[in-house]
Length: 215
Image (cartoon, rainbow, N blue to C red; front, side, top):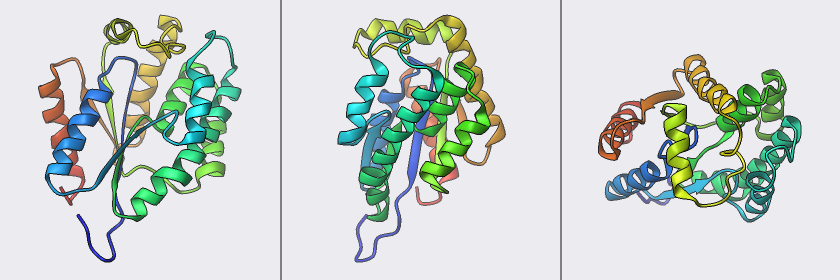
């Protein structure tokens, strides 16, 4: 949608554990929104900007014990700051809808609930780095932990440092995502990701159309 003074775009994120199908649903959502006349940008975290992609390499490769939880959090937020300032915020100001594969809720789930870093510390870093910037809508794709890891491992794409962490870690982060949604119901929605891709997308589209009035 274009105009001389475009309305600010919307910022949508998809979250969830490994193998939940975020990439598939993001691509389908982009197609559906584009067909309705929206300008849409898809991106990912960690990454999404040149500097953030360089930091991504440090986070998703190597030994699982490469970083402690605080170091990981600081790396994620360094990447996120660059991503927001160089890519996300400029796109939103031009009226583009931005859909990101992960954002700050992943840091809360992975480094907070998963690795045990104090949640108030993570919230403090968020405020310091991003201020009041936030998503318009976060959709969490929820899937049984073992099923998700089975799906993720079948992809054999590399960048599997987090996927190689133990099952207890992944169970904690799943519960973390659900707790995030429970405490932020106006911003977050949870979708059962165990069904086929069409069923999951229909549920996703229902959430989008019900929560965002422009659709």
